[in-house]
Length: 348
Image 1: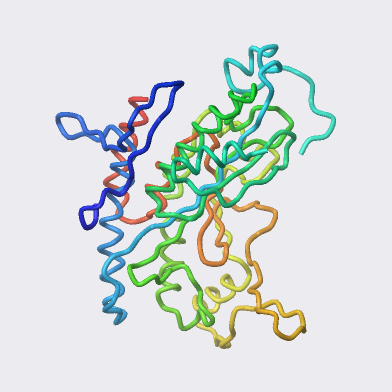
Image 2 (image 1 turned 90 degrees about the vertical axis):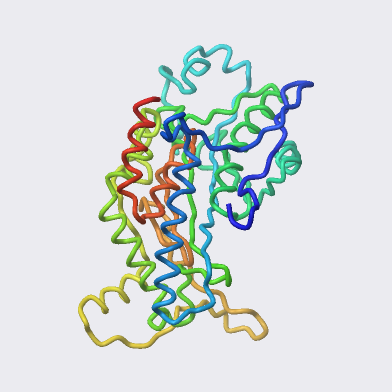
C-alpha cells in the first residue's frame, strides 16, 4: 500500500438477514508461497513503478514520483427465467446448454444499480448486447486493483438481484451454441502522480517520447509474453468461445490503428516523418467542439487494441477473475511470477 492507505476498501456481504464484513486480503502459506491472485497482481506494480519512474528521470521528468495502473472492466452476462432453467438440467448444472435447437436468428437494471451503489460501485455503461437476453455493464474507470475487486462484486450482485426477480444470471462464456458468447473487455492504462497518461498520444505523438516508449514496450511485451498472456485466459468455458465464429480470435494480435501504425513504421524505416496531428472530426459549424476520430477497430477482431488513450484486452472469459490478465498486462519483469501462476493453476 502507498502512504498507509489500504488499496482495497472493506464491504458488506449480505446473505438474507446475515451481514458479513468482508476485508480484501492477501493469502500466503506458512512457507511464503502465494495462494491468491491479489498478491501477484500487486507485486509487479513495484517493478513497473521503478522502471517507469527511472525512465521518466532519464527523459528529464522530475515531477513523476509514482505511477498507477487504471482499468475499466466490461462485464457481459445472460438472463433467463428460473422456470426455463428448472426445465433445463444442462443449464442448471453446467451454466450452458448441452442440447437443443439452433436459434432462428443468431448473432431493467435499476435494482442492480441500487445494489452496486450501496457497495460504492458507480456504473457508467449499461446496455443490451448482441445475443438475445444478453446484457453488459461497466463501472467508472478506476485504479486496477479496485476495478478487479468491483468486477468480482458485480458478478455476485448480478446473481443475487436476478434471483430476487425469479431469474438466473449466466456468466458462462458460451451458454448457447450458435449464439454470441460472453467475455470481459479489460481496458487499462498507466498514469503517474502528475496525471500524465503514458498511453495518451497528445496533439503531436511524434514529439511525445513517453508515449512512443510506452507503446513500443507493450508491443515488445506482448511479443515476448504472448503465450503466457494467452494462458491467463485459457479454460474450458473460454476456449469454447474464443474464435468460435466471433471476435476476438484465439491468437494474441494487436491493433494500433492506421495513424499510430504509420507513425511506428516511419520510425522503424528511418524515413522522413511529416509532422502531423491526430485527425479531428470537424462539422463545419462554429461554436462546436472538435472531436478526435476513433481509431479503434469497430468490428472488435483484435485481441489487444489501442483505443485512443488506453489498451483494451478482449480475450477474458465472462466468468473469470480479471486478476491473472491484470498481472500479465503489466508486461514488466514477469518471468519470476510465471512459476507462481503455474503453481496456483496446478492447485486449482
